[in-house]
Length: 203
Image (cartoon, rainbow, N blue to C red; front, top):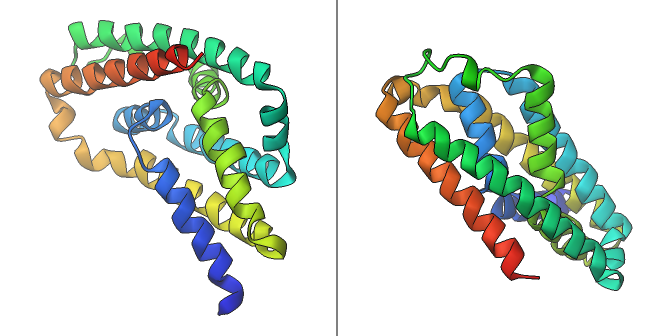
């Protein structure tokens, strides 16, 4: 049982980092409510987290610490993308539609949806700070059990994104009204723009 302690520690630590209102979670939630491409989105987010966690445990965090210009580039690129996505969400909030009546303006294809999920993950410097730098450092503090810790953190990502994406359908009765979409997209817009502002202010 003691051999599993690092796994549970990683699971708890990973969930503590990921269970928060952010760009990635907001996107997964919205796709879950729309019931569009949920499995690919969940898979992209969970696999991306797994790769980033593995890179952090392997020592990539040291590269970011020694080459801060990489983080500056990531901040600028991430902020630019989040600003665009935030304004798109704001536009949706101004013209809400009930669930099932979204029309062409929100019926993104699989490729576009996956591209957005990848961008929200890999262009977000906060993801690197959380998974590569912070989680990687904590995992390496467990010595020989660092990969067990990382495995637990990866499992946390899978559990969270699966629950968020597929559990969102429980909220569908609420989002049968356009007003609910107005609130959600308004919140998403504020979150995206707030994160973008924090990235630029951190330069």
